[in-house]
Image (cartoon, rainbow, N blue to C red; front, side):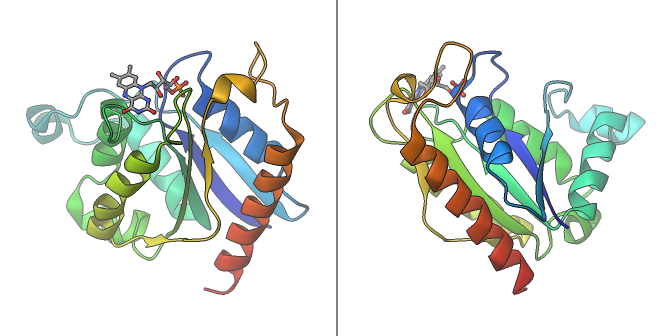
Length: 184
Ligand code: FNR
C-alpha cells in the first residue's frame, strides 16, 4: 500500500482546495491511499511558545504521520500571488525543531495541486512553494499539473466534483505520483 498524506491549505468549510483533495483521495487507484490531514488546530508559530512548551501535540502528531507516509500532497490555494499564511504557518511548525526536518521532509516525495475561482489556476502559489520544498530537502514530483481555474464551474454546492475530465486528471495524477514514489 502506498500511503500519501494530503493537506488542504484552506480552513474554509466550503473550500475548493479541500474539495479537490477529497476528490483526489476518492480517485486513488487500488493500492494507494490518500489520507486527509487537517491543519485547523495548528496555532500560529511563536518561538517563545516553542522555547517554553515545545512543539504542540497536534503538530507532533502530524509530523509523525508525514514521516510514516510515502508521500505528501499539498493542495494549495493562492493568496496575493503566493502561499496562504495559514498553510505556510502549518509547514513552518511542522519544520520544528529543525533537527527533525530530515526525518519528516528529507527526501519525502511531495506533489502539489491547487484550485481557485480565478483564471490562473494557483500557478504562482505553486511556484512559491518551490523554495520552501528546497529548504526542507523534500523531493517534489513534477508530473502533469492539476491546477483548477474557475473552480465554481467544476464543484457543486457541497463540494462534489462535477467535471469528469478533472476526475480523470486526478486519477492520472495520483497514479503518476504513486509510480514516482515506487521508483524512489
Ligand atoms: C485570494 N484569492 C486569490 N485567487 C487567486 O487565484 N490568486 C490570488 O492571488 C488570490 N489572492 C487572494 C488573497 C486573499 C487574501 C484571499 C482571501 C483570496 C481568491 C482565492 O483563490 C479564493 O478565496 C479561494 O476560494 C481560496 O481557496 P479555498 O478556500 O476555496 O480553498
